[in-house]
Length: 314
Image 1 (tube, helix red, strand yellow):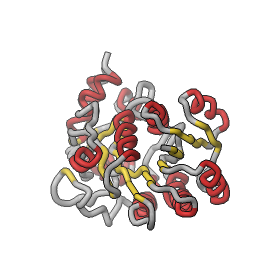
Image 2 (cartoon, helix red, strand yellow):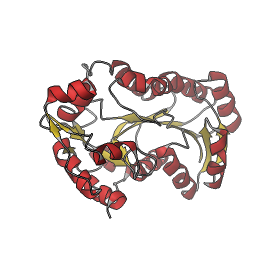
Image 3 (cartoon, helix red, strand yellow):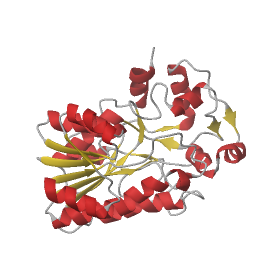
Image 4 (spheres, helix red, strand yellow):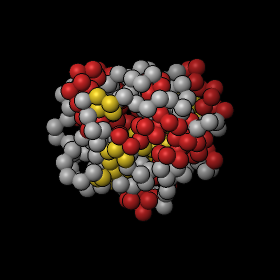
């Protein structure tokens, strides 16, 4: 198949492009940086410099290349995200998930794109009530942490635009917290540096449940979503949802750092903001049963324990 991948030079895109090429697909890989086109070409793709916020440029690119499938992975998350002001940190990504998604869907409808696969995120999406692990059928959060309202709204805009798009098989992938090459949880990554400096504490009881996704496993699931499975929303996470109080000490030990500090919730809120306090104490994890069943996919790293050791162990 001919597949257009936006955000192809990002953390998951860098894993996805060579996997699609290896599977025999023709890949048109977009990036906003001319400097990154050589790397995409070396990976076997046809590089295209494209800003998905430019509706005319999107229409021209899709009309010229005529892909059968579009995979929308465009974000703007590079840099040091403090997450005290989530909506500010995610401002451009929110536009990519709203305006960018709309531009791509409009071009997809005009030029007969059959399938549309889009990146979403489960970490901020599920209601923080009920059980610790959520399925795709569970309700989304209606009371996000102050300062993250626009970010959640952008995620829901993407999901609500893609899944019912007329004439298109819309697939939304709710990835877990990324780790591995190109992420903040890689050797030298900003989050790991915070762990190393003991600046990433366990807030409150650390009961917030996290689900993780190694970027290579996320890419493998995306290839599977391109090639088959019913339209709809899927959690793409490992098999081992775990509270912050469990996984953060293991991460520190794996990388040879001192154990994380513990602070009361009010201190975490004061130092890092309400979003971090909420993520540390209240968020819910996710089940990957639907993705396994529909895509025939299973993560190579069934647990973040194995993945952390493979990426960061001595």
